[in-house]
Every structure is written in C-alpha cells, then in structure tokens.
Amino acid sequence: MDRRYRRGGAWGRGQIAMQKQIEKVIAETMRLDLEDRAQLAGKLLLSLDEPTESEVERLWLDEAARRLAEFRRGKVKGMPADDVFRRALDELS
Image (cartoon, rainbow, N blue to C red; front, top):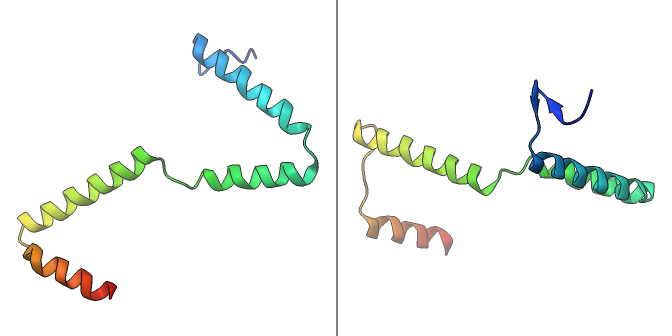
C-alpha cells in the first residue's frame, strides 16, 4: 500500500514531507552501531511517557476545576492565603 494513503485518505504535502524526514532519520539511525541505537531507542521510549506541555496544562486545569467544584459544593473549606503561605514556608524550613 502506498504510504501516502492512510485510513482511506490521501496525505497532505506536510505529512509527506514529515514521512520523508522520518525515513531520513531512520536511515541515519541505522548507520549507528548497536550500542548507540540501543541508547537512542531507550531515550525515545522514555519520551513516550513524558506528557507534553499542553497535556500538563490540561491536567492542571482539570485539577483546578475539580477543586473549585468541591469548594463550591462545600466538600472542602477555604483557607486564608496568609495561613497557606505560612504553612508552606514552615514545611520547607
């Protein structure tokens, strides 16, 4: 099957250019010795577990929304900012 066709649709120019770039990187990678390829593979695999900046931002926004909803429902009580900062400084000392 032609690589330009995936999921029944034609790839755009940007996708074709990216595919060519990936193929170039693969070809260069295959010229590395086994140990270097293994090290590269390990780093690539680890990078799959790291969330992107936008994913981290979305997770924090979800957490903030959850906490606000709990506060509004009365499940948690607010605390004056001075108390929060004093407590944080005490824990860091």
